[in-house]
Image (cartoon, rainbow over all chains, first blue to last red; front, side, top):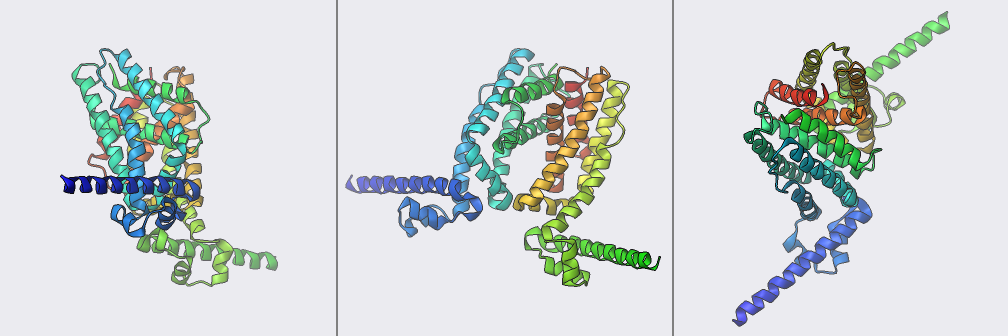
Length: 204
Length: 204
């Protein structure tokens, strides 16, 4: 019993240290960008021991990847919403809401997403992680398309994986435009237009 | 007359030096990648004087940008082909041919495109240049869509610029997949599927 208690406490302390370091990493990345950030700055800011820090993370790339997974998990929740449309119109409504939420979240998470974009360009570790995240989205979209095809709502002759990739690519590129504040249109206008093309192109 | 002759010769020599340096830059980039390449290696390989080289280019980024413009000019020729369809079917044929040529060229130029992708990630100068090139493509596609809308072939209620961006994004992302050899499908299969969604979505 006592042994277990000690281990629990140790485990808890370890989790807190990890969380402190992640929070510090986030702040350092936002302050100086990915390239200039160092793990030493993060350790100092988190006020933890060097050895302890390296138990959790090998370098700043690992820290960034955890932060990226965390943010992208929130995006993924949007893609994961139930997709069981009974009609083409219902499909269009669900998809429009998904695209709109996706782009609004890109705006909301703008600062961290800018750091992610830098890191994807520079680090192959981060870039590989981004590709894995992208594939997860594409697989999910692919399933939704297959469902619509099986229900007779979508054109069955189209390869659902190619369609899913192409659809995600459009969304992703608009996401980066919103992250960079390069858009001159509203989220709603873009979501409406791209959804209309996509649904008209895919659905019967 | 004599003065002019001397100037012509000087100008010609200058052009040759520039060309030699560009050729050497291309080779060095392909050998060691963008990050590790140095302008010194290029100057040595081109066998020209340091001072002469710097008259033409300030750094390796400038050299890469010229090489990128050159390759992308070939891509742009595809986008520039005349677009005066008389029917939806004709539009689909032209667009299919454009997408196919675009992706085949990505395969053909794979090695240099890989260098460009690295450089876009690392250098903001190169990344800005890429954005300028992208806008040129989007403007051209936008014109084509506007033409189809004016001819009554395409849905007039859609914003042609948003549609053009979204269409270019899909093409660009597949381009990078072919550059990275990440595709598991043939160029034809992808071109056919994405063209079908796009034309069905946009045309009447």
